[in-house]
Structures are given as structure tokens and as C-alpha cells.
Length: 174
Image (cartoon, rainbow, N blue to C red):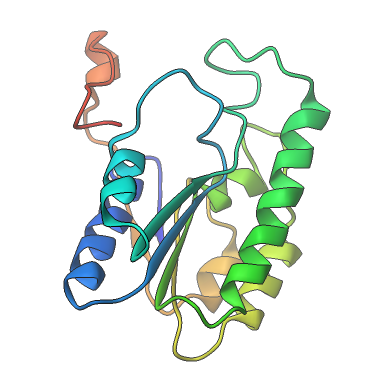
């Protein structure tokens, strides 16, 4: 699990994906917020090249009430419900060696907005077959999920380009 308020959670998870792919593993990344944005994400483009060994599914509708979001909350909630169902199905499918649930922790409490429940995330962890490796990312991991995880890395923000009004960089941030 990669959590905390620092940058690099998804990048760290994608680094684990690269290592796993190098060993011939089947890898899936399910993104709970990314999707429905008019930008090109590098991980999605790379997945197209490495398919079927590497898949990235962008199941979200963007960040709720941030970054210009005007979508009805119900649309975000429905996307999160669908993402949970997809995660359950893929986790129990036996088709993957590694699955990343990107930003699922943030979906539990995103700036006071709850798209998924802690109990639902814990149920996903319980459904995981022993041979499957599962990585969760996102800020503010709840204590119950932290306790259940085998590995937790907390990213700490020391300095961020946003503080200097530097926008996200193609190839580095997305």
C-alpha cells in the first residue's frame, strides 16, 4: 500500500508493475478517479503497447468537486460502485498476478466525500487469493486498512511543484 499526502503513490505502484511485467506476470491497474478527462495518461498508452500482459482500466469520472468538476455526485458514486464490482470480479478471476487499485484509499474519504466504504475495501482484501499481489494507493488510508496490509509506505510531502505554481508535467505526472 502506498498512502500519505506526498506525491508518488501511483508512480511507485507503476514501478512495481514494471518489475512484475519483467517477470512475465499478468498485471492490471484499476483507476478509481482517472477517466473521463481530456488528457493522455502515459500509463494508459503504455498498457496499449503491452496488452494483454498489462491492462489499465480508467473507471473514474475525475476528482469530485475539484479541478473543474461539474458532474452530478451520483455519476461519481455510480462509477465507484462499478469500479468496486470490476475489482471484485478481477481479483477473484485468477487471471492476474498483480492488481493495483489506484486511488481506492482516496475514494474512502476524498475531501469529506465517500465514494466507497472501508468495509467494502476490506472485503476486497478478504476476497484476494493467496497468490495474487494487491497494491492499494491513495491518501488517508484508514487504520483498519493499514492494519490489514502486509506492506505500507507513507509518502510524505516535503515540497511540491504546485506550491510554486508549476503545473503537472507530461511524462512525469501523467
